[in-house]
Image (cartoon, rainbow, N blue to C red):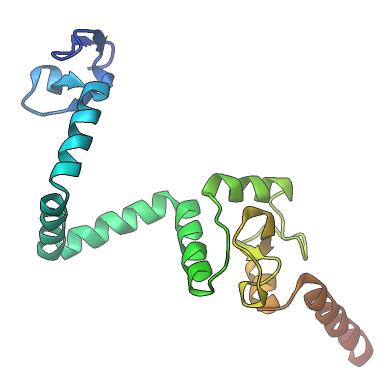
Length: 179
């Protein structure tokens, strides 16, 4: 199919078959209208039949719980950044925190910090940490997010970075003194 072209039955333009949605029974295995012509039509149909569409989806989901879980797991595995952002949004909503960020903004923050834990420089198992914790009035804006290894993030809990680093220093000093 790659390299083939087809004429759209709506706009009349000749386009690559990749510009058409797949359809097993269609010529070349694609629909007769290109994606850019179908999109407005399907959007309008969805708006006019929103409740009917939602009911169809709910029915399929209740009749196919295993497939639904399988699709969800597959999506989660291929979109870890989006899963991470979803979880943080949920936590932020529960804490009534202001702000939001995208997976791209979070990745940019990690890149800015060299994809290392800001507390110990580890590159293993990085979490997104709210520098000012949500429980302390911190926001969910990307500017409040930093990479932290799982160990530091879990140890930090609801402390500010300053409080956490003082605690880590005290633990290190205690180990030195007590051997």
